[in-house]
Length: 177
Image (cartoon, rainbow, N blue to C red; front, top):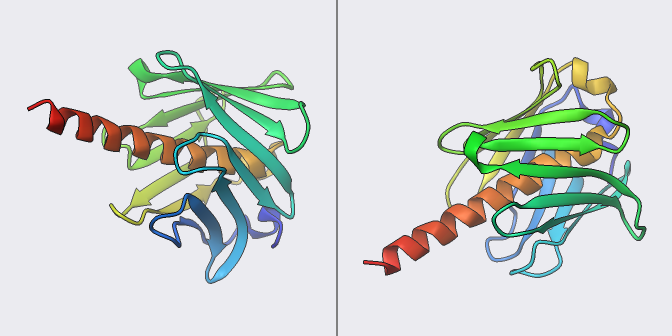
């Protein structure tokens, strides 16, 4: 694997190489630079890894969900993402005091990560239905932020969680009739 930070000026895309596995790869062209793997098909614990490091992401809660981000194999929490369903997004509170704002469009095909001044740092543009691919666009401003590799992984983790919630809601509503 490679460092994500070495590929910031190149095309980046999250892909789902296997239809029935919850394993995803961040690629630049055909080269895999990082991955995000879920421990089980039904759980929310995932591990993200690149040459930049290794982190875990875990969603907890039901009505008021949050996601914790930790360095792998430690209890050191790097940040907490607090979901705000009413605003189609949420806030990442980084342990150094920064806050990053996450927002999605109505169809959940775009996720933007912004700083506290509403400057877009990272955008995720999703395509596909069964096998999802997502282009990652990183602004010049974002290139210098601490934690950029795991923040990129968190964005993808959120997209996967939103996709699963949409699927579950569709299945529930179709059985209600």
